[in-house]
Each structure stands twice: as C-alpha cells, then as structure tokens.
Image (cartoon, rainbow, N blue to C red; front, side, top):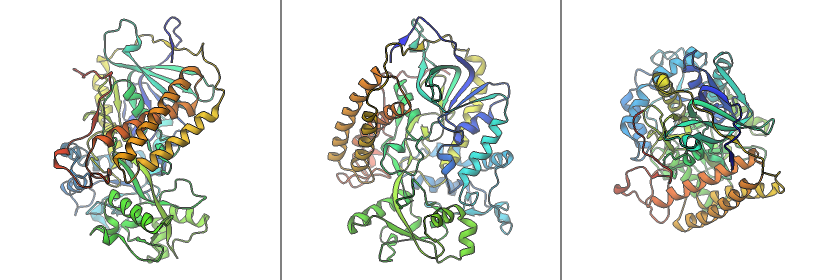
Length: 548
C-alpha cells in the first residue's frame, strides 16, 4: 500500500493501543493504572471473540489435594516434550491469584459448598489433568468472563473503545524517513462503519487478536479468528514459533444447522463416552486414559475411526448421568442441542473434530514483549512456551490472564522511557479504485480454507504439505495484486492475514520431520529426540532486540 509521506493526518494518540478484546486484551486494559490512556480496538462488538465461546473453564490449583507440581507435570506431558518448564511454572504458580482477580472483578464461578477443600467452588477435570482443577461458570465460563470484563472496561474512564475497527498493519520506525530507532509506533486501523483508514499512535502496542483457526474449513472459532496479530507482527519483523501445532478440538457438534458449536471437554471430564455409530466405545483402544487423553490423541482417534468406517461423525454420550446433573452442569450444551431436536439426557450427540486453538504464535518473553520494542503480544496470538506441541485443556484463559498482568506491569515500569511517537505518514488511498470483483476475494477465501483442511489438517504428509505450499504461494500473489490496486475492506484484510498465516503453518510443518503432539505426519510417524526444540521462523526484516 502506498503511503503519502507529505500530508500527515491528525492521528489518534494514546499511551497504550490494545488490538483485540478477548480475555487478554480486556484484562490488560483493566490492570493498567487509571492515569494511562488506553485505546482498545475490537473488530466486532467488544465481547465477540473466542473468549465468549469458551465453555470449559480455567485451570488453576485451588484444591488442597492438588499441587503446582502436579499441574506443571500434567502440562509438560500434554505438551509432548516441547513446553518450556520455567514458563509452565511461571504460569501455573500464578493461577490462584488470577482466579482471585477474576472474582474481584465480579466473575461468578459455579460453587460447591460441600467441598471446602476447593474454597467452595466446583472444580471439574478435563483431558490431560490428573486432578480436578478447572474452575468454571456452568458450561459458559468464557461468556461469564467476557461479559464481566466488558462491563468493567466500559466503566473505566481511561479506556476509549473503538468497536467495529480492524487493524491493517503496524506502524514502525521504518515508516519514518531518517528515523534510526527500532520500535513500534502504532497501527493503521480501518473503521468498518465509515470505511476510512485511521492512524493510531501509541507508546506501546499490544496484540491480543486471538488465533488463526478460520484458516480451516471447519472450526469451533468465531469469524474474527483470522490470525491478524500474528500476520501483522510477522510483517513488522517479529519471529514466530511452533505454527505447525494447530489444535483440533475433538468434539464439535455435527449438525447442518449448528455453526461452530463446541461440545465442552468437561462432558468427558464428567464421564461422557465416545461411541461409534453402532454404540461401541473406542477410545480405550487408543489410549489408557480413554476419553480423558489429551486432545491431539482423541482428535486423531476420532479422525481415524471416521475414515475407517466412512462415517460423517462419531457420538458423545452422557445420558447415563442423571438429567438433573446434566441440566445443572451443562445448560448451554443441553439448550443448544434441544433447539436442534437432540435430547442429551436421553441419547448421544453427533460430534466431529474441528480446528480450535493456535498453539504457536508471535515469540514473546516473560513480560509479553516481542522482538520489536514497544510491541507486546498476549493470549492466543503469542508463543510463550507454555503449550509446547499441544495445549492442555483450560490452560489458555489462564495464560491470557498471567501474561496480560505481566505486560501491564512492564508497561507501567517502562512508560517514562518511551516518549510519544512523532507524526507518522497517513494511509494513502488516492490512487486506489473500488474493487470490481468481490467474488475473487470470496473464491480465494473458500479455496484457502478447503486446501488447508485437506492438506494441512489432523493427519499430514510431505506431499500434501508441498501441494498446499504451491497453492498458498499462488494465492499470496493474487492477493498482493488485488491489495495494491483496490480500496480495502474487512474481507480483504482478513484474507491477506489468513494467507500469510497459512504459509507460516505450512513452512513450520515442512520443517518438523517427525510426529509430535498436534503435528502428525504419515512420512515420519514417531518422535525424534533431536527435534525437541521449537520451530522458529525468522522474517527477512528481523532485527535482534537490544535493551528495553
């Protein structure tokens, strides 16, 4: 995109620019001091992100019978040898304090007054956990967290909300002629209501845009999960890591009228069984932990059985539990299934795997700093080292809270060292025309998501990955041409980012010549001890960070 360097527009100026409004972005905005001005960018309504749809809960050591060491070991095991132990300990040790912080904000978790060892809160158990340590709000924890933090942020005077805005690209010192510094200065933001691109300048920018699971045809994620933060950081010169590890949730509802509806893992934690169409239970054949095995194992088992039998789904059955228990603990799942003519108190639920979580992302340190000074990343956008080759259930919201707290503390410490950015060049659309074939964007979007599902999904081969790489390269060329000549809109911005992220996923998958965690390839079926390191991709514009 051409930039007019002669006619600067009046920019929006804030101390901190937060791009993204899920748990990571909202909690960071709330943790910053009142005297720090914050701009919070939300692509849709404030709560419309993956956090809202998280059903299960948040893992933390709250039971006297549990321990930090147990939580740490469970996470390391689920991560298949690629978690960073110091990072895992850093996160799980801060779990209880962050749950207390949510309680202070007004989040109401499900209580169990009969179990005082857990402080009176009901804890459930999910795949990979050896103890009950998942605190939840029935089966709609994400909604409870998102709506509560939403209300708190709206009431905070120092936070200015910009809903219906999407970030296009980061502004860095490279945009300023003669500027020898190396830092992030802000971002170009598209106002979806007016269609205008606006300049936002800030001392610090935080990417909290979530994951990239809309790159796949079938996903549990909302439409906003298009990898925006990962793609923008990559273009700005930041390294990314472990992008080959895309988690497929084993149990999404299979129904023609259900769109991306997740069946929470807590059902299996409370005894739900996975069944073949003939009613046969199959998970004990794949893992001694059966339905409570980590997600990568369960998803591959379901995928194997569906392909072996040629069936469209398998079934998840909790009807052996009492109706009162099901209605108390899973009202959201029960209600949605009831609306579709399924009674989960009497029979099984048809389920299929779907893309669910991005385990890799923008590389950050313990303070959530990226390679670019002034730029932070938190939540699913970031690679912290917590998840390794497979995220353990309910560790994601915990990671959001811990790293947003750490980022807030670091920003407050460094605030006086980072001056307000100088004027930046405005976004120039003077030579652009209106798009004449929107169908091209729609067609490219569909093609991308389908070949990623077919070639870069649950089970991979080198041949499939190379085929996907050729298609991604062709799409990237088409999008560059389209992006350079036509006025942009939401679909084009998202498609550009998804193609960028798809290429990062494919490159990373081709580099890992083994099967580990979420990356399973028929060409290299076993783990290789020599590959127990993260897959790191380095952009051409990368500059090593020095100092603060």
